[in-house]
Figure 1 (cartoon, rainbow, N blue to C red):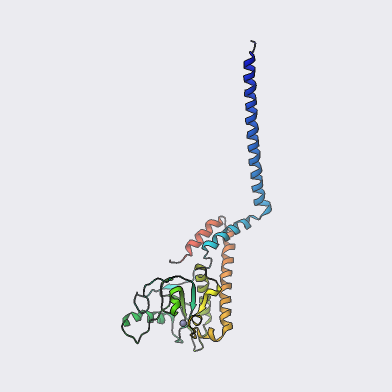
Figure 2: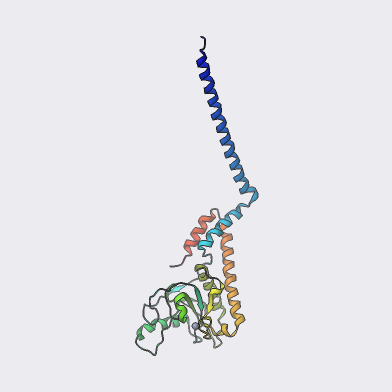
Length: 267
Ligand SMILES: [Zn+2]
């Protein structure tokens, strides 16, 4: 059967359309292949995959990092009362203020119980308002008396914008025992990480009012500087340790999220 010229033209244009579509598909596929190749190259050749994960994690931790493990804290919150726990919120948490308890040889529990007993002397002017967010004992035990972000009576005008840590000590010199010192380093590293406070925002009661508190670390300025160095070094050590441990796991970002959630404290 003889083909009609019109049929031929139709077949030719169908052919051309097929080739155009075919070529377009080829171009798209080639483009995709090139993209995949480049992505793979970036992942495997140019940058170590561990480095990629590490920087992703560092980015996340900059936002919400609490990579210092929460220390053991014995929470014994005071009853809300006008003399030791007014139950008011701080304006902000800008500082950690370090103190010593000017009664050598007393325990953290005794001091905490004294703060609590003040509720029975609300109208007695012989008893001053007194408390702290935390008290650290001679054996390194940490008792929390007032929640973070709630006013405690320790640091005068700084009560409005700080967390206070009182420290027990065995002698008149006011020097902390090794156990107290280590717990203080850990707690201050943890809190400074939690509230994103740098070295300049960890201060002494002395720096607020000029009072000789914490005595030993006012008399010995170099010991105070050493304490700050130790806090910041411990904080850095914990960060490095946590990051390297998390990076080695199979799903580092999930691991990090789980770690941060478990470590976030009792806000
Ligand atoms: Zn003080």
